[in-house]
Amino acid sequence: MRKLLIWLPLGMFLIFLVVFAGGLISPESKTIPSKLIGKPMPRFALAPALPGKPGLSSAELANGQPHLVNVFASWCIPCIAEAPQLRQLAEAGVPVYGIAIRDRPEDLARFIQRNGDPFRAIGGDPNSSVQIALGSSGVPETFIVDGRGIIRKQHIGAINPEDVPGIMTALGDVK
Amino acid sequence: MRGHLQFILGPGRGIIRRMVERARLLGTIGCAQSHAPCTAARSPSPCRGGLFAALLLVFASPVLADSLMPAAKYADVQLADPAQEKQAKALMETIRCLVCQGQSIADSNAEMAGDMRALIRTRIEAGEKPEAIRAWLIERYGDWVSFKPPLDGLTWPLYLLPVAFLGLGIWIVSGRLKRRRKG
Image (cartoon, rainbow over all chains, first blue to last red; front, side):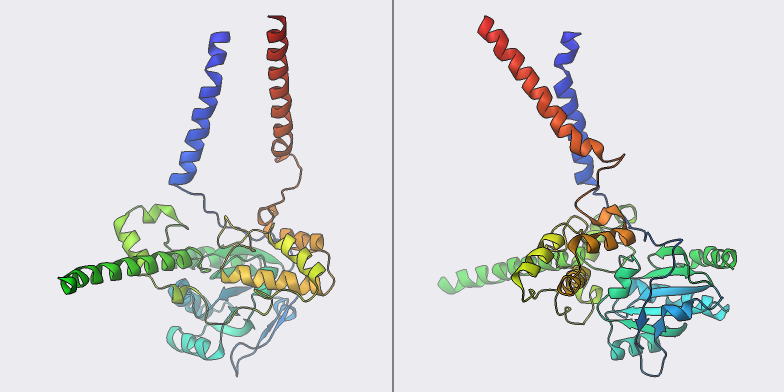
């Protein structure tokens, strides 16, 4: 028994070493989901991000219809990649609302011109305050909000073509 | 001779300077706010290809990963009241950056960290208590966002094990000392 115990510290050290090396070789990188899923949309009122297009307030989102709230930015590359999928969803009749993070009207106008405009309204969030209030940790992120304004699902990262059916189903489920 | 030496050394130094610049760029990319589909830090599996991914990273432009807007007013400006600034700073040091996940927002140069610093300073200036702001952030991002984990069913070893190990150490040492005195 005593002989075995002598090896215990070395064994513990080796376990520590393996854990440590594992962390170094493939560092943990987590996506942080918002804790607001199942809770009402935080209250906000954002000014229009583009002249001639309405801004966005949380009150408008509780209009009895499920919809998508897309957190995006003109300077965000994956947002370009998901633009065709957002257009596709909008063409299928899904109301898509945008929150533009740290964006300037001229950049946003160029982005919309180049990548299409699936948005019914775009609110400008110049200091990320609504993004932080939503528990979102980057762009792009898309929230599925039901007709009562409750956040039902969060899609982190770009919406790829294979994600579209899942989003359509989720929208049907929250109806 | 001298001219030749300069000719040989000249481009060499240029390369080193460029390497340093690249390294700096890499630093910025590591803190990009966008959920990029493939960066070494975010999703390791598709990047395992190695060299190609590394090359992509080296030639990626950080300008496209951050916005063109200037930092928020209070991101890098202290509050006028030193007592309030002290409170804000203490809180910022224990709030985790969502983008550079190993850093506090006080240390991170990510844009979102700057916006979070500005949010904290603005709220402290308006008279909100630091712990209320921490609770507000935890409500949104979970305990993960705070570097001060609460004592609960999952985290108790974090608080109790150091005490237990200290007790164990005292017990072992005192046993040895007693034995030595006897011997």
